Image 1: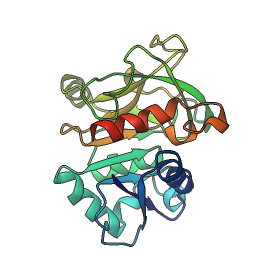
Image 2: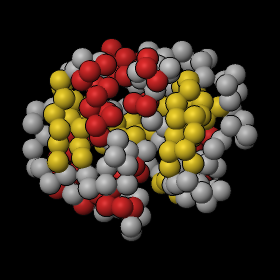
Image 3: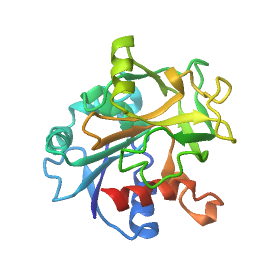
Length: 228
């Protein structure tokens, strides 16, 4: 599969993602600049984490206006796969490719730590290859990761099986204490209705190398490669 990783001014996880996809997973990777208007024939677009445009207006609000995003939206609307991680998730919600919004953490503090997440759906390519009962240790690093949606939208997201990950404890139980940022329903990631656009706040690319003593994130990439 041919992946495209977009770099915006302020992205800081793009090289991590490129390393994992190319070196760990053995995939072809195109580096895409935010001013590009050509996706270079990629099958799968990744919007990495970081602080696009310094998050000066609102996380992802300026990045959604970058020229590349018009092509990413067209790609997604044609059924092409898109994954946004952390700031990439924020960009996807700002762009309307995913529902809801990512608000300031309920602590009003930046949080950088390991969390546990549990697959919530068995119908998406990003979760089909995962153990629905397992708690995966995946780090987070964000100040605006609190997922929010109005009641009617949240019900629609639930009814359409769009929640892909929930924060949980090490034993796999979804609890208030395991929710690091106040996200509604402990939501750590969602998909669109078409199940081809995925957004998640935790960073699987930071948990995909044996040298980091954690390869839980690698299983997420393996699922994508198997079922996309």
